[in-house]
Length: 188
Length: 137
Image (cartoon, rainbow over all chains, first blue to last red; front, top):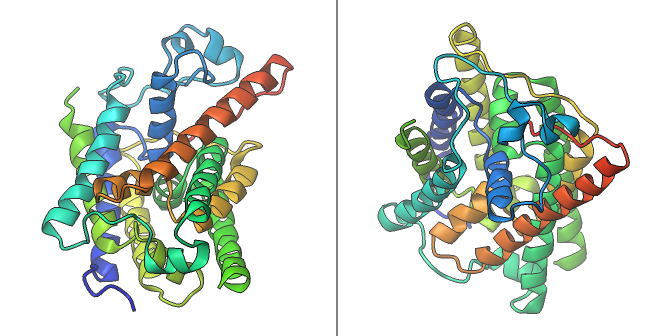
């Protein structure tokens, strides 16, 4: 049974569009969670990741330019390079937003994170943990390689009718649909 | 730069995604097997409203184009597989953790490992002359 506590589709649609358009209006850069996640990983593991487009060296045409990562062109009034804290602040606020929803909104707080349907597919134990880690691994690698996720390609890119994002969104949605039907077939 | 410019949209995004049920594996799975189209409708409305807004703001809000590169489609394919299995895109894993779902930490660890793996792989490749993809997101 669908959870009756959740918002109707139109409220969610309006809320998502508000962020997809509001974020670039406030920051002069497109919304993108996987991009922020990539910058966070780069911050936490200096020297282990490829140079980001936000690296100082990119501005001088250093290492980042050498690997084909050109700096984001300056746009509008706030053309300065985004400070290092920007991605972590954005990501932590999303997390807090989830807590607020659980606190005020009536979404269930706590629990293992293993919903009923997930458990019936992958079980309770090591299989479930392995599915979460392996799934996450593919999500991290895939969104980084593709240069976007449900927010960057799906909301922001599609909203701006960017051909690369339209194609990527079609591919990840289509793939997820096929894999979900396969999971139903094989595991249920 | 004011931190609220990223914190406020982040808070709203986390709140909306959680209240919509997009961070709930079962809700997402039901959308992906077309048993419940609620999330799909929400996504379609969000895309439609954004298109209208971005079309109206084209002059005032110039944003860099999303570039096609060799990773755009295979990356999306790999992401789609992972998304269907763990029910989380990068933001959703964080939101689940915020909702107190402790096991989302495993998903997040996987995502971090995947990003590191990608960057190491492509750093190794760049040494042999294969250009890495651009960060479009």
